[in-house]
Length: 304
View 1: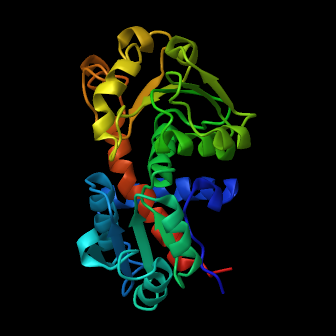
View 2 (view 1 turned 135 degrees about the vertical axis):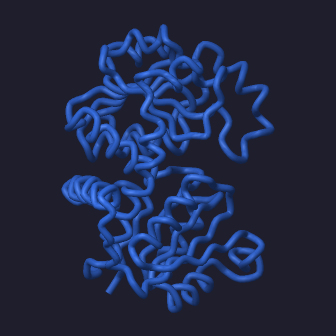
């Protein structure tokens, strides 16, 4: 039987995602009460990371340990992945030795090839195309702070990047409005917008996106692998900093989100990220709890 993979938010149904969020909050409460919960005792998670990581690696390793399992971390120099050996062969071999595989990769296509030949669940821990695990934490954070996100308005300010793509998928799955403001030429991929057109509106003016929103979210203007474009991007994104003036256009109880790392004075002002509307530290912590719920979901439910 084929395993369940989590390469995007669309790999789970809307109902499954809602149950996952509920479970993440339950696991968080259990952890805070000091209650041990080890359903993954004897399970092994392999992590293949082609890109650097702080929150993703720590949260997955800590989460697996808290659930009773063990982890193996493999950097690019530790495997022959797509260098001396086809991705398909690596997937066939590794998935005979471990119970779940988490991949942070340069190419989303590579992760899809890997998953297609894996005997065990594969989790996308970030690719050039999307970052679904981040959105699990983001949605959990909103639910904890404000309740149901359905029908709310989210403003994405900045680059139409991989995290933006996952917000687009989330708007479809959780039924909220997403207004995206990017400079011209930095829009999210058209096929992603088209697939969720009912929930997504594009702008080139951040003020239009921010007005009457319940969440304002941004990300670094130059993601990993785009460092050589930094100077050009700083110019292109002039006027797209999330500062207090922009936050004032949102609803009074609006939240500010950022997946981190953040660059104060660039995509966000210090007064915002360190201010009372910021929930970025809760987002970061919730990576742990949301991913624990995901690991439990994928490893304790029968494959279809």
